[in-house]
Length: 318
Image 1 (cartoon, one colour):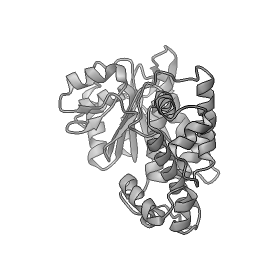
Image 2 (spheres, one colour):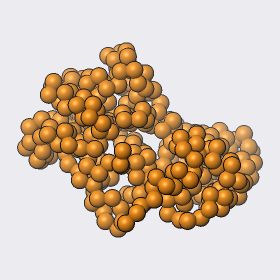
Image 3 (tube, helix red, strand yellow):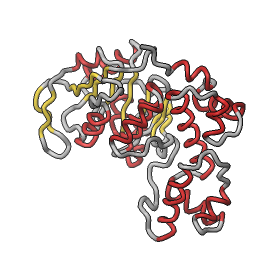
Image 4 (cartoon, one colour):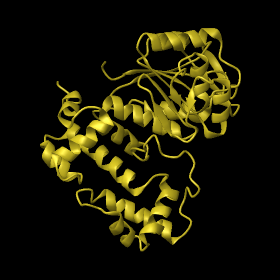
């Protein structure tokens, strides 16, 4: 199927202002060679919708927008403990049945669960309410620590600002790394965080000089992906022992140095395959894989297709 271009976000009474703002910003019309999304908020009855912070939001569209969108997103809302109206659940189920990509972040996942779209699937939500989701919907395999969980035509994301991670993942998956990276830069966001990364980090901001050094080393690594970058070298640059570096790295990023570098290299490879005519062998060397065979193996694991097939998929013809 072609990548999504029409996006409808369901905003019920009590909708999260942050969630509505996230999707509105990500799918805003930017031009500059980026996809032009037909984006709309929709609700049960068009008009003034009260948000979770008490401010009204004017929503012009009703549930009919869910019937025409390529991507349907269930936004978080304050009354998530009560399932949406049957008409809403039917609209979500119908969107999925006709082949739309259906997503939710934070407690918006409760709407998808109530519609039966998460039964037999893995899913996530805000870590604080993961237990409640699992208790109410035992047929859902809830992953409380994931930033987002991709199950093909159904994708769920964690709470609050992880909505950005969900949207950027969908952009990367459907429109390619170049598009996702460009929009992330415009929003001053990290271009990619792996879905398996922990939702909650014990040290989200630098606490001392060691964290500042770690930040500097990560920035240096991004500029030197073509080099081997062993953990011992990164630790040396951070003025730490290898063990201390690995522990500090996990506390600050929620993942391991190896996994972080692998994700970064694959993301850069995706962008080069989309935006340049470099041979696959040169792409592999440019991102630090050394050979096309190694890149192919890692790429198939991540994308399910070899690099050349991926390049053909994202080649835009006039």
